[in-house]
Length: 407
Image (tube, rainbow, N blue to C red; front, side, top):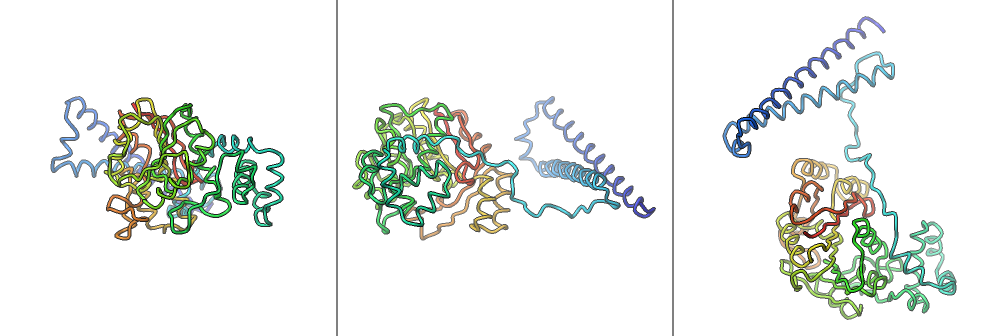
């Protein structure tokens, strides 16, 4: 190493040492202030309302930034020496992928609904499906995982109206027309969504919630019934209900999916159900649309209609949705940076993205796209709910799944 390179390295190390010393001093001063605030029983919340609060917060932020910068500098110097670099590390060499998370979603380990329905099929049923599928559908089956192959076998059997599959599974081939709101169409969606039915039951079981004979279970935001129809086929002993504010979807479901009680729900509480009349409710991508005030109002309404000890399952956008939406091209990097910063700072982000046109008739300034963190939810539900299960990114490496126990 040349003399010039030695001098550059020493200068960088001195810079690191100085920054780290400043950071430690700033943090120590902040900790000392915190200690004496507590010792003197000063109400920090009240203090923050005073003019000097902004200056104090600025000092704390400066300390945090200085310490983080010093630690990053040390890490880059260590890596540079370990790799045998002759000069100081380039501090502008930052990661370009700002949305990737090494904490990967953990997929569901069971498919209880799919396996229960597929177990009802006979060898003749399976042979009939194999004979009925076309070339594209055969390719889908051949390339699918074991569980997805079972799901597709059920869907294709329903789509091709194989009598044994219809009779033994308990599913129907009724499909909403194009004019009616539906979250899934085509051969792969025939009979409803076994994937989401599995998601619901797996998450409930993870939280220690079993669907027992006679339980009243609500699909909150059911649209035209793509999930509740599959759950009703798998657990016919439960009493199944569905509600949604979209009138044509609920009307079609009530006419074409017998054995399930459907109601058009209002866009504001209350729901048409008595206090503590439900054992379980689930909501697929509903709290992913509520602004914070609306989401909290509806959590209170769920608390009213679910019995003590009952459960609410919900899915929401979270940190994993940021990477998912970037990869899918749903949002630009600039907006996703805004979402990420809001989640880190506030735990919540919302935008009224439907505007005056609404979302299939559902509108209002509090219905759009929302992201939230588990910390935000835990803060707002305590002590009326217990968070019994949390599965980040569980829904297609996208939305998070929560199971809340009603207290």
